[in-house]
Image (cartoon, rainbow, N blue to C red; front, side, top):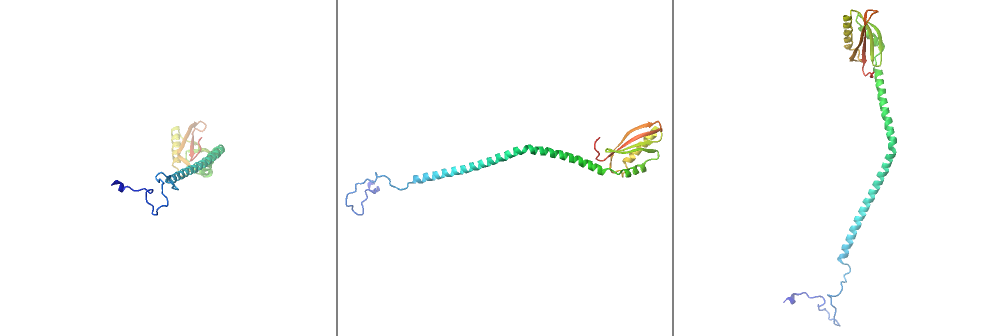
Length: 208
């Protein structure tokens, strides 16, 4: 029964046309004569993939080499120019410091009050028992030396009141009213008057 279902080999198949001589070939033992085998395509595909990967990696390695070369070139230029650049930065900072000082002096000079107007204002505000001995406008402010009539206690009170009056004077806009100082006071034996000295600081005045 099984022998009837078994597929017959090509060698045992009866030819359509009877051969003119007997066929003694064993087809099962003959070599495979297929022109292109499946293993060939697999090998070709594997080789192509390997070549593609190698090309891709080589291209990226070359690009990386170019980038590293450019970085090294730029770093060499930076190292070469760093010293002169640092020197220029130091010079520029010195220039900025000098420029700030010049601007401060310029602002101070332009903000200084006119001496004539200031002297007229001081003369108009002097009380009757106080005389102006000296008027000196300096870089830090205005120095007033006054002579005050009266007893020591009264003269000191007159001087203090006049200093408070100057602090409250709205026309003295160039001065810092919070920095009006009572510098000194002493009795002058020659005139029997109290010699006092005021310092009215100018706004933005440089330090002593």
